[in-house]
Length: 223
Picture 1 (tube, rainbow, N blue to C red):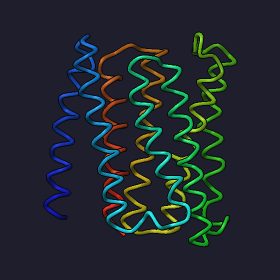
Picture 2 (picture 1 turned 60 degrees about the vertical axis):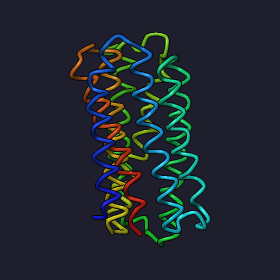
Picture 3 (picture 1 turned 120 degrees about the vertical axis):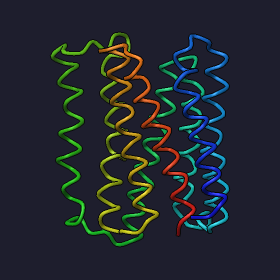
Picture 4 (picture 1 turned 90 degrees about the vertical axis):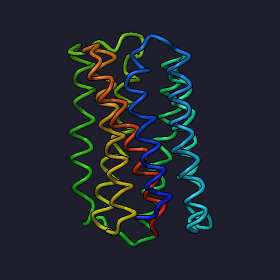
């Protein structure tokens, strides 16, 4: 592992550790500075390393850039408006899924290699719709949009694992692990927002999300 990659990961994880405390401090300014710094770190590192390692000329790579940018926007907007932040993340999720599908096409991944992702995706997504329509969870003013949002993050979380299994390689492994943690983080977010307002749940949300985005960004240091 290169020295620059090690240094970046250490600094990022230090900022993440600080965020575990700032996000529950009740000080919005402190939390915003900490969160925006961390989001800017993963976005900037992703853009720099993906360009340096020759990903930008790839035909479908603009989809991935858009996905990362909207994740950054979602992080910022979520500080001030849950719905606007969710919409930005949803757009990013759709572009992550589109990028993964494009990767599968480019790498000649067959349907038989990834078909199992469909029932897993349907099973996980359906849980949130069932909880909504049976009133097991009250999504309040968000309503059915919350299960719809979770569907978008589940799509790239599950699909990334399936495609990484088919393509192989350290880049795809780290990208899949990162997007899978992104998916898990939104499950924690749903629990914290609508079920149990516990600090440990919120920290699990932040820990899995920002670790996931770190891994996704770092994956582009490998070819």
